[in-house]
Image 1 (cartoon, rainbow, N blue to C red):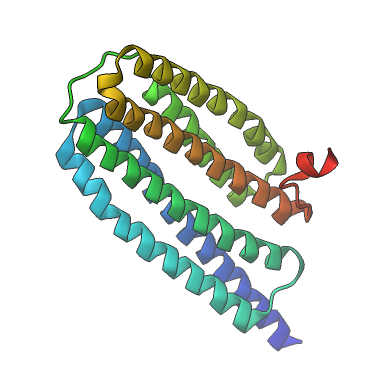
Image 2: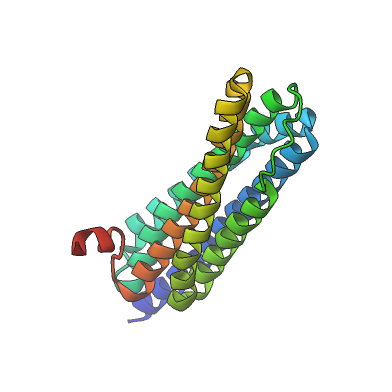
Length: 227
């Protein structure tokens, strides 16, 4: 009995440590996203290069978190909510790494765009990024607090980001027709909007994983399956 209690105590400590590690990755990703948008707005190539290099640190942290998850599964063989938590962390960890890649991709677009003349288009990248970043932060809050209510609110927020991306792409397509000589430039701008939308999609994935972790319900593709 004492051995069982001891193992349970060790598992609790390791799960708390896992939470801290995941939040550390999340903080790195949030910082990368904020810097990527700032670099884009300021046409700061030096900062963009730094973001691209820093992505390696996020990749390394992702590996560490995955290794910790595998260790917990192997040593403790968790069940019920503990098992769902570790499985959710593995998926969320992967999503965060992909967010880091998206931030690096935005920085790569900045390298190109900084060398081009400004086209003066009313593209609200900062506003779209703010919404996506808020979704990322709230999805991590939902994870740490085990809050499926907050997670479901995040799912609804994704629609607003989707609309912003569509509006931007519509504007870009119109501009391509009016100024075809800037097609490459305009497509780079459209790709930034798509990257920002993908950040919101990743936050939605995290929210879905939180719901699974707490309630044991897989809601991914639920609307499509019900049609």
